[in-house]
Length: 341
Image 1 (cartoon, rainbow, N blue to C red):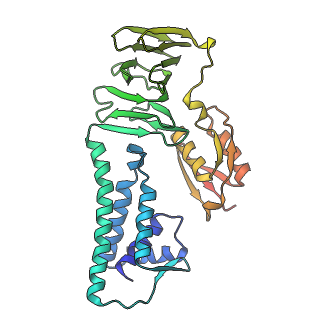
Image 2: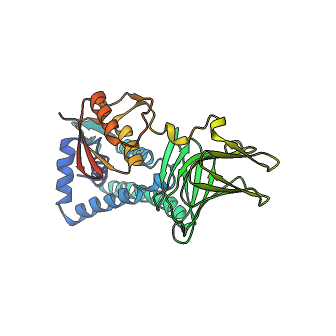
Image 3: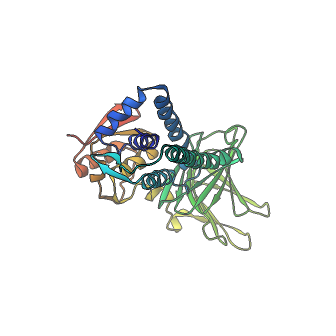
């Protein structure tokens, strides 16, 4: 098997959904084969491991799409024809010297592609700030200390790489709901439109999509809001404050307004696939959800207005009925969805 064929095969198996049984058997043979074959398997596994967290640090980069696009281009270069799940090559005759140069070029392209992705990842890690951008209607971000942030689509959260070491400093662009882990020795701050929101441990909403008007709504705990003129105000549960273009702090009662949070729409599903639903539940409840399914692509079309509450079993019961699957708990924080009933 040619080097490029091996690369495609390993990719398919690591990508899980695209691999046939024959692919998996051949992959196992490569893993247990000669030193060079094992090395190739190990190298591509390391690449997948290296890139798996990039979307958490830089969500605007679709790493999986980029990897898939690269391997599709590799298939096109190789004039691949699908045959029983395992890509077979056309029998075009190529001179040995040309073939060696070609394979070397393919490997070079692969190396450059993955180095570029890794460079983007490393740059963000060591540039001092992690940036989270909500690509969906609502995205959930979990910070190192257990703090949870629900970002509305298009909103951005910047977090210091030294977060939770000596301080907990963030910056928000847009709208978000915060549930801050309590730590009296490390106040949590949010910089937003030249204003500062500071808390110890609380639940609050910030609406700053309109740069001329900032809103802070407090649902529990105590919040200190400081404007750009260093004027400040303390807010407690069921209180809010508005800041207008004149930088004036105007308090109000939540009961007097339609107070909603970004969190409320996170578990609202509209024609979602089973793996997407599981991904959201996994992030929301901080649990591991795995699958025992032969054909994941057939499990689509889940729509739900959201039920609220913090009982994951309520959602699992609905999933079992909608998708005709079984959910098994493996431990306190681990579940398996079995589609092969």
